[in-house]
Length: 169
Ligand code: S3P
Image 1 (cartoon, rainbow, N blue to C red):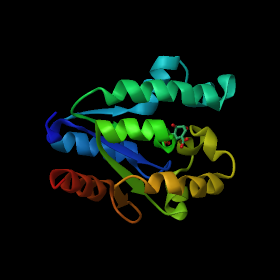
Image 2 (image 1 turned 135 degrees about the vertical axis):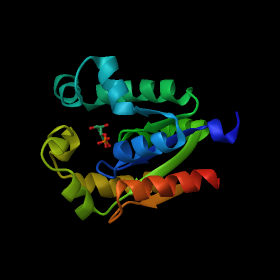
Image 3 (image 1 turned 90 degrees about the horizontal axis):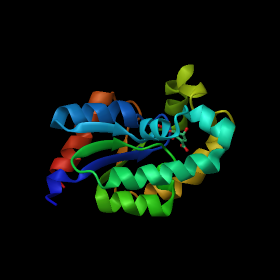
Image 4 (image 1 turned 30 degrees about the vertical axis):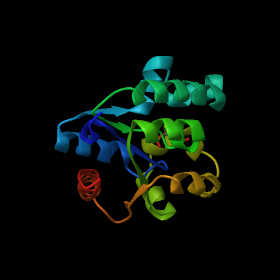
């Protein structure tokens, strides 16, 4: 597969802007955009909070693994993954093999200021002590070769940075 047809895959903690920025990247390079959480919701026929309350996190992670595999075989798409998908080592390797993976980062303060109202209630894992979760995931996120700090940057600036990284890869 030509390098420029490999998927662009965004990972990083909740609130780092994967979906917003992913859409902008897709627009800029003329590719389709897909959000892994939308694919999970479609597959389950339930919202993310409903999956967690009715079936529990393990069922959510199982559907997430299936969606990871199905998205990885696509070509020339920009994929925003849910913040936990690439914490799983198998999922991470699948996406690293499938595309150009970029990890978006932000400080906890920036994340907190972005995730208010519906943005927070739609994310079951933000209902508890998410700082501990944030800290526990850093090792996995650090394994992603390309990192972009989004703190104090606009979505357009972050999208441009990703496109530049990808073009120069
Ligand atoms: C999760 C992140 C969410 C969603 C689910 C679990 C996580 O996606 O997949 O609530 O484990 O970090 P976003 O990162 O798009 O908020």
